[in-house]
Image (cartoon, rainbow, N blue to C red):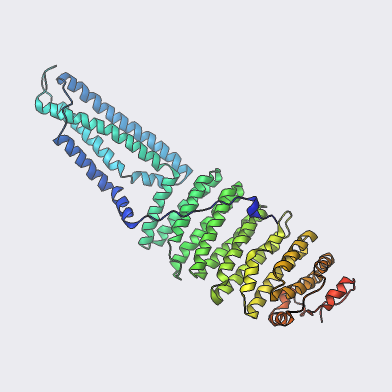
Length: 502
């Protein structure tokens, strides 16, 4: 059987290693405004205290040089700032308005403007100090000052190159996301949850705009960083503010998927679904059931509110796959985990009921996931087993309503191969036949009877122990409990019209 995994290559989100605390502190210090200003003051002081002997001209050369330097530096600075502001405006319209805020807060602004200001003012000062006639040699002190001014000019040009490089790096979406995450981490550390939520929404806006222009690289990068940030939040908590932050992550991933569905951006769509799954896995492993249930609820909203209305039923398969995987992980976590797994199966049932009516869908995959067998085999309590069987065969009933006979054969072969050795196998055989007759699918009943000519009886006691806990009204639409024996099977093989119920 071909599944969505064989037809679609899933993008894998890998977690980047979290920076060490001392590296974060060093990064915070080196990127501060005061640090850059302090370093600039040290460089300027060294230039004035120990200038190299570079200028050897006379007073006329000095005047021409100073006039040129003052006008050139002022023009270059104004021109570069104008170009940068235009680029920032374009970037803000493509990604987020926070770019202008980050530009204003750039630490390079302090060092660049300080060096330019000192150089220009020093040049004005030197022009006022030259009183000698034309072509007279400069005094040793003025030569020293002119040499220092020449070094400052070289530093200005180098600073401008570095500044332009820093601005270009700032305009990259990766750098913008990194700066937003820096503010997000600070807000989380200070427990300013409203500010943290705002930062998450800004990263989501970048991802949605990337999806709208088919920029899957930027969108996937945003998802990776959002997942890393989400994994650093506390999970084992019932504090409403923290749960709201987790819910915000789910809402933003859901919005990204909505845009990706409309734009047919498959890579970003599957990456978002996987990010939600990893967040759900973390919640299940931490036994944070409130957050895990919200993950499941979000999957349901995505399938019924985005994927199916947009005729993207094919991508419901990974949703169902992730839900089964979450239920398998939770089923081994005690009573509360089994309850979560049961509720997850009910969500799968509600999604699959709509999907089965679509054409071209690999329907048996929804009934033959490997997690189904593992969960049934892990349940030792007959009551728990009955609850899961009730939900599962409600799913089977929905499947029978629209299934082709070839799909019915695939499911019946899977059940015979994997489940007949378990106590649920015999009960499942009889329930499947009763359900086929109940919904008046005689062709399905004949197919099942041909595949299962007779039901095994060696596990009859275990079968009846489980059946007594089942609520057959949910399976048979309010009708009374059917007779679970082999007589109806034999009669159906001979084409006899018999009553289903006692």
